[in-house]
Length: 171
Image (cartoon, rainbow, N blue to C red):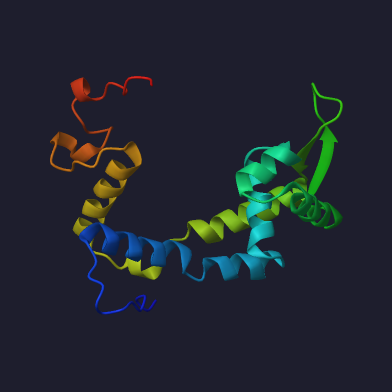
């Protein structure tokens, strides 16, 4: 993976540089192409299939989650349905709506995509274990919403002292 080219006159803050590197590793790696090739469909359709597998939903819910408009969602689901990967079923409480669910073939395809996407890039697996541990601690802190890595447990809710594990107040 080659680093992103940027204008040399634009210095990056450490946070900007960290984000740029994470984006490159996550978004710009070859996994999307591998998924598309393995499933014989665009990555957008594979993403829709994976979402349907994870959480059967109405067309409107799917469109909202995927950030696409309803007419395009219909085209995507029609295509997945023609391939035998999903099916529309009656909504249990709303006679006007349908729930989109994966078929057995769709589940297998979604699981295949998950295996490909979950395989870490070589750059990550090549890190020494101590550096990987530091990275993991930082990522856990980001996920938990704690930016402070200096507190006991490094912001990790699993290793943080019990008194600091109280949930944040509801807003």
